Image (cartoon, one colour):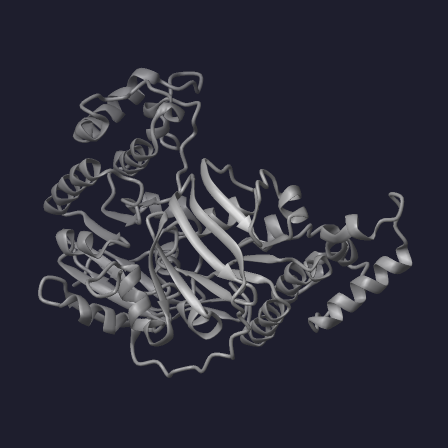
Length: 500
């Protein structure tokens, strides 16, 4: 009997099916990889397992017993711990205090017993001493550690809870090679102790070096479970991609004029990015998630600090240290999180549509309510946005219409460069098709469009070229016959023949 059984799991987010009857079975004392392209359901499957989200249907069994979770605490009590690429440490607390957070030993009166906390944390940290350069930073504030060390602390935090099942979701992404080696040694020890480790990595070489078996998901469904050592890399890619029908792309509106030129752009999450986008061209940012795509777009918009490099629009240098100056330079930005970054949900639809272009329409610092309403109504109708009244709150719109609002508000600005960070995530098929048309219209108007997406099919159907990012740099460029599902996956995983 498998130690972990996940059977017939289904999960829908609005019109998007994330899991469509997904299955996974894994044994005690094995390292089991989870593979699949962007949007395949890997993250959602793990969130169901760890209690972050509830499945709409299906069952999870652990050690023969149903695993029913109402949240992550229930999963932890059942012996399921997870380590994600996103950090959850509190910078002002010591490493030991972070490790016992949530399971703190307390003295009489409810105060933290620091000595007991350090006794509990020390053995786990000592297993990773080489990852910290030989030291054990028990009392060091977490904020004083470098990114790789902080990620190691996240692993230690999970191990303090003595899990029976450990999830490592892209947990090696920020680690140096020596730290990866130490982590893998510890994972093998855990395997030998009977712990089941579920492992996701964008580095296929790591999967081959650590995992015995791999479950492959595609479209929210189980495709195959394979022996990693005996399955060729091109067969893994084929299983992840499947046989997909070719979708004809619309005619390109690209001209020969270079509108956006980026040279050696550096910053958090980026490693010297260079690219060009011509007027009327739609250039995609591909690769597995978390490879610097969002950081690149945010830096170009001035929302993230640039450490080096140059940006030019129409041959003129652009500094844009903040979003206000980026907007004045002709840059529009559609963020990945429409709720917290793209819209003021508790403000009227009219205000959301008007915000980016207020400066261009004010006269002597004054605005005409009638003129604002007329402009907002025309913009909303241009995108077939369905709403009751412009005075309604943005929060009253459906997800698809909210996303249209995020894009529509930039039309009056007539941007020269449009930056899109996964703008079609979480909307239904109809809204997606309508936004495809909107993005193409922006390009046909002469804008240079840089389009990041977690869905490879969107990149193939919409873009003239796709730049594949890997660990903060542009690793490959795909266009023409090379712009296909299998090549995108191979390039994202740096499989031989997929990269440049």
